[in-house]
Length: 356
Ligand SMILES: *Cc1c(COP(=O)(O)O)cnc(C)c1O
Image (cartoon, rainbow, N blue to C red; front, top):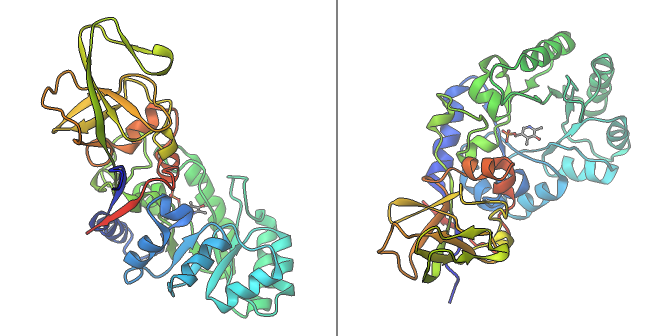
């Protein structure tokens, strides 16, 4: 009955990737960032898988933390964008969730909350998106200590840690150290690229996300990132095959034309499933242990590929759109975007199938 288009999620790869994070940063507590439906891999499933191994999780927003609690996840949950209302703060306190404070408004919400959660405090070291300015930090930390009777974890976020030689990461690190040194708090800086490529940024808490799903944040090879294992295989099947004569074209806009007689296979996946529409014939898929290029524009529900060089191709054959043979990073590059975006945009229509 079911359409064969699925996102297979490999448990063993996620566990391998988390262990790699711990090997690379053995002196840190490495929480698992599972925001945005665990980067498309399934929030509750990934949380259940990792719960025995991780000290804590992180999500972007309170609703994601709520889902985790409804699913019976009990480990602490850092709420990266924090909480804006006193009610939200009290909820966080009751459910062992740790909001990150980044504005005076959130500090006021904490002040007015009936019960106070443990909090983290964000310092803006140059990303200029969220966080208190360095001169404000000592005062905010003092207030949080007074309100919660514990020291907050001080954290910051890197803007360019994926560019391994970019000096901005070290500048942010130095600014962070100067601002936080005398305050006696635990710290948290490293995202995936910093965990993999900037050991100086490891600290009490690291916050790896992308790497847990087996994707490299770097544009080129990197010794640690190259050991990651892709956790998602986006797979579909061939639902039609035809031979077309030289000169005929395929798909909307006739953007692909056969230079010689060609064999075209149609796959049961399209941009409504999250396979990006700007993929062109530089994009390739994997079937019968070899690659085949796209032929023609990606449609809402279908993709056409050129299988002229694979004569044994038949209806019902399985095809990998991305996964161990076709890095999602490569598909992203051909679409002018990043692996993060493609993973988080695999749509609801695609069932996640969990494999050990
Ligand atoms: C998303 C996020 C992370 C994880 O980043 P990755 O690059 O996926 O490892 C860490 N910290 C914050 C504040 C984030 O928003």
